[in-house]
Amino acid sequence: MNPLYFIKTSFVSIIFCSTVFFTSVSSAQTDSNAHGSEEHSQKEEQEEGHIELTPQQIKIAGIGMAKVSSASIRETLPLYGQVVANTEHMQSVGARFAGVITAVSKQIGDAVSKGDVLAKVESNDSLKNYAITSSIAGVVTERHANVGEQTNGSTLFKVADFSTVWVDLSVFPNDVAKVKIGQQARIKCSAADVSGEGKVIYITPFGNSTNQTTKARVLLENPKNMLVPGHFITAELTLSETQVPVAISSEAVQVVDEHNVVFVKGEEGFELRKVMLGRTDGEYIEVLTGLKNGETYVTKNSFILKSELGKGDAEHGH
Image 1 (cartoon, helix red, strand yellow):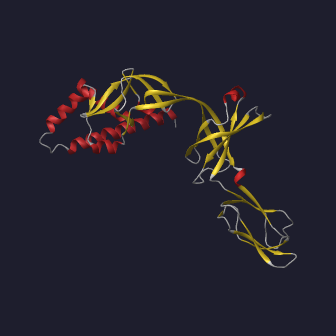
Image 2: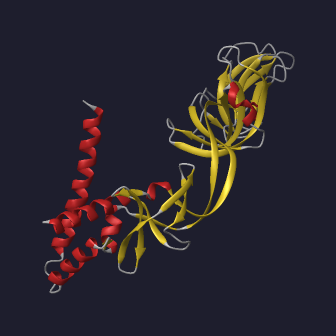
């Protein structure tokens, strides 16, 4: 199927659903004695760039709102990388005394608590059984122990604590000078549907001979163990931040008649407001004129209000 056809049909479906929704709610109000005057008033408001919605309509349409305020606009460097285990939170477990393994309690992938028994060994010297335990809480990532085998001083288990992980970012030669220890990085992993923030803790002093990149390592909190080694991630490294006095969410901006506009919540509904925009980092955008701090504006699903405004204009044209 043509992707453009899919996008167009999906968008039409959304607009159709919102149109049906507003029409059905309006129809439900026809039993009211004041229906005629309310409908006329709503059309007049739409003609002037106003839209009135009930709290129920706002809730069902999923319209989100926020206050206009100051914000930090970030200059960022997009990077790509991979999650790796934090080796500072890993334990290699072996036998204290040489002997024969008599029992194995944990398998690869099993969660363990500090002090849990991983295996039991019969000492070659005393012929007594003793337990091999984990000294940290985490997940068993390796097991090299089978019943009846000699321990032979080797590593029998590896346990990793994934409550924090490392993210190794690949930095191309032209960008290496921009990367500094301590910089903030926003991490997103689509595979696990997880995002978070961490700081650069290490930069390799040499490059990768295969792809000519340098590695920058970010320490990332991972309390729910959603990120695991091997996950690919995207990152935005913050190079600088500029505080701007008036800013809004970038997703709030719509274009009407070739003008950037925002829908502002007033006492009598939503007002279409033209704005002049400045700097942006993709998340927030600076507002130069048109809004002031403290005003409530639509951040989510503002396109529904735009479609209702267009529908009102079309009805007025007829």
